Length: 242
Image (cartoon, rainbow, N blue to C red; front, side, top):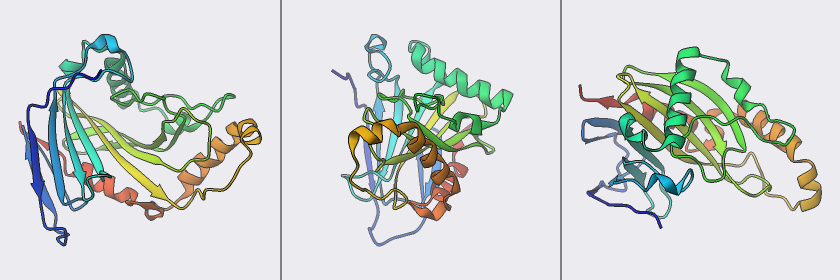
């Protein structure tokens, strides 16, 4: 069972008809957005590390952005790098991100699927329970306050046509003290739902993944809801008190 201690739950509500930009600040972290009208702030005490990857998360603060409580527009999670140490499977991802930011390899290499139709894993905290079966539009991001990577991913145990995607930012503060995760659920009409033969589809899985990556890479930012520019604009506003 997940052990979570909610120390503070802050609910900030604005008029549903307002599209103005809102500034949210908590514990020295601030951002601006017009993406949502409601913000829920929760502090998690952390799970026992022995629960393992996909089932244990380190202490962190999560800010959920939403208009409809049943479907969040986005979530922002802030971890202290020092708090990841008892969780080697999380610290591994943080270290991998820091190595990417130092070495700056070509990130398109992480979009290539292998013979089993699986992509190389990119840093993601917390660890996704079903791994990453697709990565697309992988790019570096750097601002005065944070640096990291952004990409579209899918985490699923099933080999079936895609209907849901996540646009994520994985970053660290410029002072190296914080790890920041941003996740936006994406909707798109690029992948129409059509009846498929499960056996034939399984045989064509590697080809389907490769075609899906190509489709996502070629799409315009406004082919998604919310638009991909939304995440970019959100991350650009992140600041940490010095």
